[in-house]
Length: 438
Ligand code: XUL
Ligand code: CO
Image 1: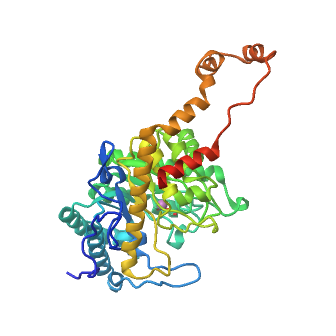
Image 2: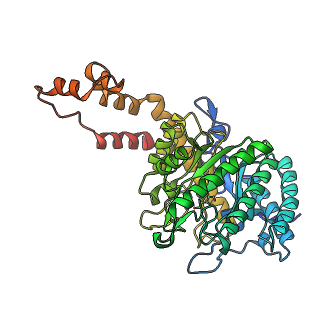
Image 3: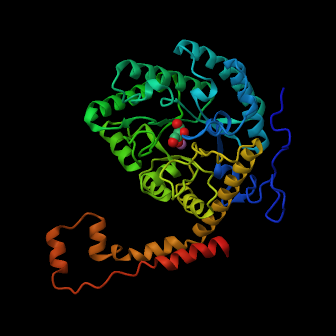
């Protein structure tokens, strides 16, 4: 069998003082942080599409990378070679999970029947690879956005035939996710949205989308797929407006259509940025509603208004993200999927290793710092004090919903209201800096 990454041996933890670049300096899989190992906390996953399918194309230029495993002209040979490269890469990196779209595993053929036939062969091959390596599927999904038939949406298409095709594709994607033992199934509304309301029946599209999801839930029950269903919100790109705008909007949609008991959320950092939120905001909103399911770990560039899907090397952001994840008591059966791709000029195969190592080390640092902040309860104590007027008297009554506008008026009408306590934002930001660098 061809070895695609000949120059790389197994990536090991060497500690922060080593100068070895192809190694982890902070991610030490078996090191205990609190009650779990780093590996158990972080549940890293490699994204098949960015790492093995894509080759660095952007809106202005063709592929900058030349991935030898994608060069075969026969679609089956190409798919099997891609799987070989993927499992060699993940084994050497020591990541135990991957995520994939159906169309990463094989390229779309003339008919759905032909594509599915090819898919079956590749799935069988991948099952073998999974057995050999112990690598598991974090989540599967269907690509309902690349092919031109989906240009106006899939489950929100203006065309019933396109809708039917998308439904059949999702049916198959759930089946293969089950066959591969996938722990979750993701819906990202790739083009579920609109470009202009002038031509859009929004009500019909949203109703159709809800029916689509109900059918998916039904089918999963029917075939005994017990993985967690996840929605991945994104406000825009590729469409101008996507229906799954952010966690709050999508949660309202799920509640309206009686779908909320079947879904949790896969939260992507760069999508949060595009929605005008911080990553932490989206994680927090999901956590307090008990719908935090999984994470697409990446980062955007604040100077660019699009989804750059960069590797999450910003330790500060990772600290705040891991703070939410730890407070959620982890995200299993979800994980941290690197929905990230190397920058176009980082076109060599070795850059795939450098990029993942960078993301894994930066999240390991985030985990360590967040755990320390939580152990010391510094933020908890501050927040607790900030709200302490709600612990007794009229405040307690407000929290318990046992008061009224009349009673509150009576209570306050003759009092001189003092300024609330200082928010101490700069003090807290410095505190976090001391935890990171101290
Ligand atoms: C697109 C995106 C997707 C989903 C899976 O922005 O994040 O890759 O994660 O379809
Ligand atoms: Co994503």
